[in-house]
Image (cartoon, rainbow, N blue to C red; front, side, top):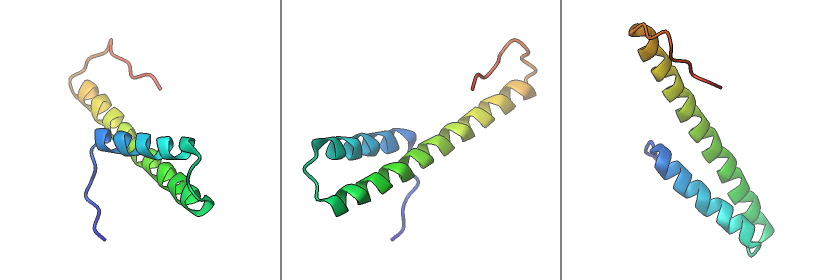
Length: 73
């Protein structure tokens, strides 16, 4: 199954759904575990996108020699 690259917002929406389903406590254990794993994977995707954006902003700042801008971690 081919998976398209999701936007950050799509990942967050899907993650909110997963969390909501887990908080509902109505899922059988096997589905709860599958959703938990899905949530972990979505979190990793979101973190990677945020890291990519941070790197891009840092490069833009460095290329434009803006010295008074800092990216906090």
